[in-house]
Image (cartoon, rainbow, N blue to C red; front, side, top):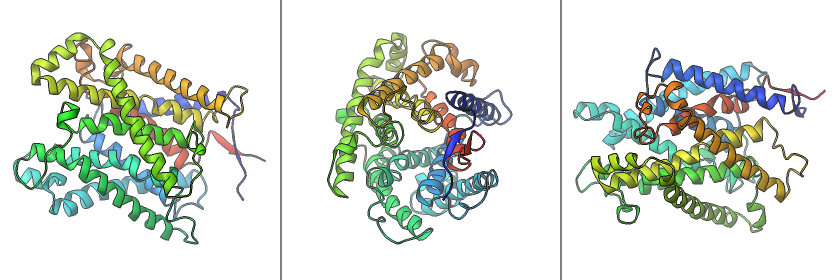
Length: 402
């Protein structure tokens, strides 16, 4: 049995060094690949599509397949190999599975098909990003809320267990994708084949950003459960699977929607009035609602680094409290929200999005908030952390106990 990991330099120094290392790696790679001032300049598309699929494929590799077949390689070899495999799989999933196979039946999934029809291929990239958005919840929910039911308990070993779970979770993903994403493309491509958004009347907009606004909060609740919440508050539910998973999932959806509504209600208290004025003038009241739903997702995104770094590299620090107790649960929750607020302030009011990331329109106060670009940075910035934890097993920041 492998020895337990311990922070190489103790705490909080290991956490601090890890945080700044991941931040500067993410920032440097952003400049190379995404920043308009950099050599590649892929912002926002196709950059956001690639980064999103990198995380989803990484989740398949680590959470579902258990790092098979590389789990016995030593570090850093294992991390390097899994990173290379991830890049190959990302290309294969996007360019082959989506564009060339699934795109045979649904043109909005085919970049090449849309270009042949003289339509914008970017819409196919949007469709892939939306699949990933759904998948960020529907793939890990079976592990986190359902305890891998119905794959576990069983005597299945990898890769059979992983592929069985991948098939089951892909069915869930397809279910949610058809209901929540496909109608948006019915709004874009008029005709009887695709339904139009069923949420327009109560959401104030038919845009897919309605889905982003609350689904992103569902993702945050799901992963905070597995990280700084250490399984709470769902430990209070003492029923067998799959009922426990169903209760947790439905409760999460309800809580996420309520949080999104709160974000929509309070955001105008700090966002400049001219931002809403310009949105209203451009496309009417529905555009204001679209922005508010998207900004709810952006607010959620700022919690990602705080809860991930706190759990994985500060070891769920509870400052003298019992880590698994309720006081520590509330302490870490409040702490994550406070750090998210500080990150939000740094991005928008210190204007890191402008001078740091090259988002040129953020030089203007009215345009600073309206493009939804902070969410792209928030997801990109967690990739170095996730790769180090998933693929490199925290090397070199943690060492095995003697």
